[in-house]
Image (tube, rainbow, N blue to C red):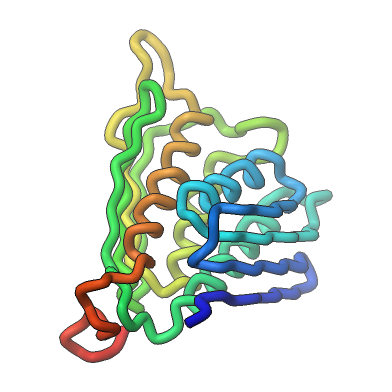
Length: 203
């Protein structure tokens, strides 16, 4: 069964196209106009093992908010569509990912119930010239809402000895941890015999 989706989201502020194959090899073609965000979406493809295309044209002359938010919403919708009725999947996934001094834990339940918990320390306001670090929480909230999943992301360790957290490492470790958790949760469970992993019979 093909687990793919193609989503277009068009508003007065953005035009987003997302295509995903949950059973891919990690190939990615990403372009949002926000360089660091592109780098993070590449992490989702590579470490999740998903083939992913993202093309966004947004009102960056104002700021990056609409571009990043609408991309996350379209990406979440694509995940939800590609999962179909979720028959045969593992449903739950978790990962703890180190990145130098940073340690991040992510846990996901493909529950059909959107709920996001996000905890990170205060960070420098920007990574690169365009990516506002305050948007990371909103990305996860938007993605989780559209994907209809429960998602917990916790930065367990961040501070360097005698220094402040490296915002690049903190955010990148989050994307890698979420990607690995999604990889596990979306995987087909050979023991499930194609059953929906819920006593309700639906997710």
